[in-house]
Length: 198
Length: 198
Image (cartoon, rainbow over all chains, first blue to last red; front, top):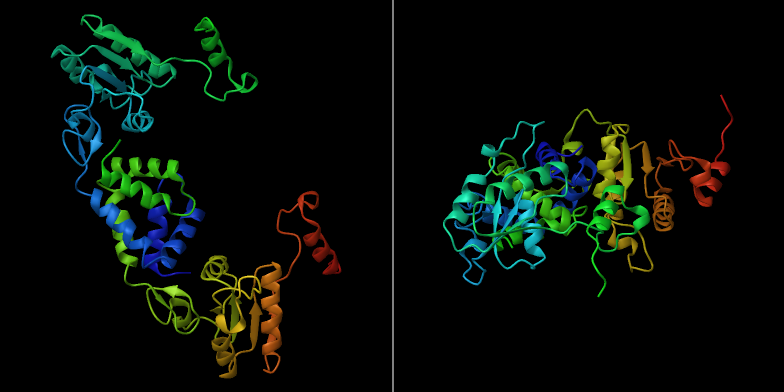
């Protein structure tokens, strides 16, 4: 069909999560049509990021500056740390703009199956941050999966020695969740953690 | 959340058809993770295409060469022209590798509603190609929509003056199509165009 260069672009785009071969081809065609506007804009955006991405030495976030924009922001509450598994989780939480403190990215979760041990995660650096003092609360925001919760328990134990409040995200019905469609595990959690009305 | 550069990339990716804001963010994160491999590969692929895309003077295909790879290919049957609405249709047909001739891209379809008249489409250049001689068959491969078929009829009429065979794609049941799920229009077409068995 099209030239080798166009094919190459289609297969590079098809590797993006969320784009299959078919939608990658549609994207190529769209870029071809918008070759005066959207194509250079995309290239510029990629260039803006390329070679400039660094991992934050403090929290493990990925940003174009080190320390990252969140750690460097003086308006952020320095007394709270929210611990997450991955950078994606940090971004998701921070988009919600609910947590005013800073973050700590573990870089994964404990997993006997995948052979991920505590020393494979950024736990030592978390303990060091807490040990340094000035921290009031550590929010454990692991995924509500078995491995996420195992990781959460492990970190909670390691933090017990420090004078900080250790909290975790509430588990229960998601907003808009209909009981009929929710799994038993979620329902059990929601019932167990039931609260008085009003 | 993330830096301005990362936000810019997310919004540039979100403009691609098939990627919404959410999947664009996932794509950014994936690119961030693969910043040593997939990110430079995507940039190279875009660079390979940028500034090199040209419209084929003969058929209207978009390629990195002019005439395009198909028009320039001597193994292609020079006696057949397949007329399509858009470059996307050309690519879709050519991926199937069924048509051995060349193509002609109209660049749209006649539409009273959108004010697209015959002179807005690449019809004159099609007639010129046929008039030049050496063409045996013109396949009209417009979409099976009202406007596509109007365009098809119009071009068929304009071609009547020339000694060429004018054909169009068959209409009927799509492969794997279940009668129960098909619209009445398709069923009517399939019944009207029924053929003897064996």
